[in-house]
View 1 (tube, one colour):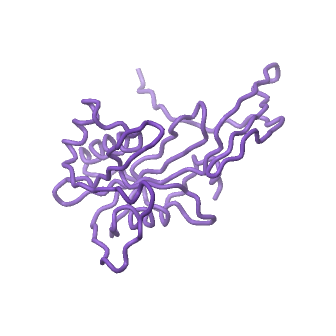
View 2 (cartoon, helix red, strand yellow):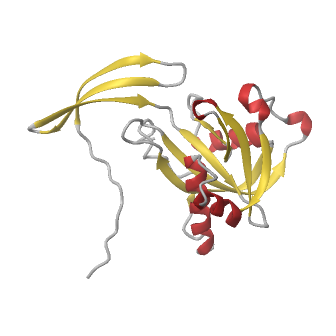
View 3 (cartoon, one colour):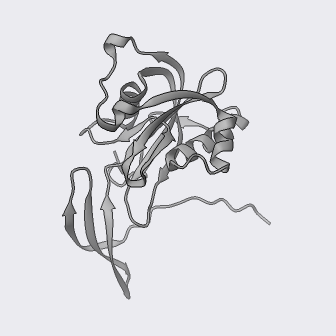
Length: 213
């Protein structure tokens, strides 16, 4: 029996109509009418999201740089990876990741690879996240650091052994989905000496707003 290869694939359907039912500060809610097949038409409401990038920083001791911040919708302080929205017009995803690492963790990195790409909630949101692996990290001089405000002003950082962080996922102690996926992907990539990682500048084609760019 041949081994089955599983891979998500694009599936274009006819967009019959689209309406913006809510326009928000960061994302909107759309109402789409879609011709699913010649005999089937569906209507769906979903969040139109700009997408995001996330950075898993790994040092020479296999420690991951994690940040802790308050998340109001769940009323918890969560351990996460540096991350942020793709909300700067024309900014490539890799440059956005470098900016977020500087803004949230006061660091730069010499080596960048694509760790994985994910959809956070594809049944209700178009949000796509690219998770990068960054190595060869440097601390930014104090006079060149970003001034954090609001919830970000309370951020704290910690270096956590990769295996310990993965154990905390399985123990139900780390809940941020991008952090969980990134940490598990890093552990899997480490097992094959990071040989399967993609080039950091590979197009982010699964992102609905960046396809073909």
